[in-house]
Image (tube, rainbow over all chains, first blue to last red; front, side, top):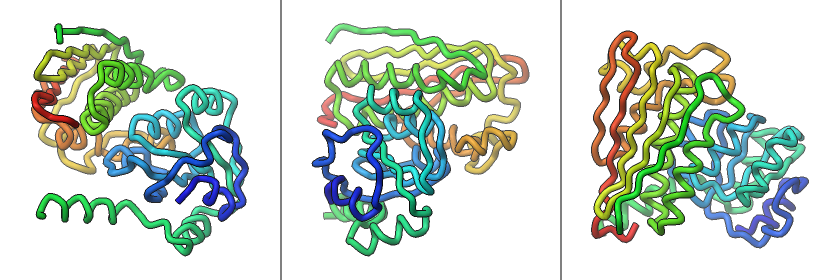
Length: 126
Length: 144
């Protein structure tokens, strides 16, 4: 799913990465726990989070997340914006709650990371 | 490929900079041209260890060594150390205060996650002895 489509579905404001809206997102993940993000697999995912601090940006860059969406209309700090820009990480903000944002993306066909896992396992077996 | 060694300082309790050393590790590995999979594994391990130093440790550093066959991270600090390494390797074991959990960390998954991502892990510590980690990733013959 294209990031531009995610922006439409979530009625999101693009704070960083307007030029990257053509990027392709493979899966969705939602967490306020950065430790979970680091366990992966999260590469190629859009991260929905209610956590609004600089570690969200650093954790996303380290774990290969494609884009970050802050829920509940949260607005990032200037430091978060400049850090996301430095690392070419699109950063969006949606008025929806975490639950509703996840539901809207799922309904439109964006699945969780489990699918990536089972696909990877299937490949190993095959 | 000649052996390369880089050192990155980690400052305890500095949450503004926490993670910057690991991002430099990630950038260095990317510049060298490693595949995304091994870069993610090494970066995640560096980051978990760096956050541990920032949250619990003393003055520390990450030493990245790259040779033709391996990526090696040696990460140490001069903090209070880990009394029970076996317990710290269990998922969910944590001594984190609430403020660290509110930042999205302190779930007791740092060292277990390092162990899972590493090809080799050696941990040395003890009360008031700091923590020394050696984390190795085999890169020989791997495209990723």
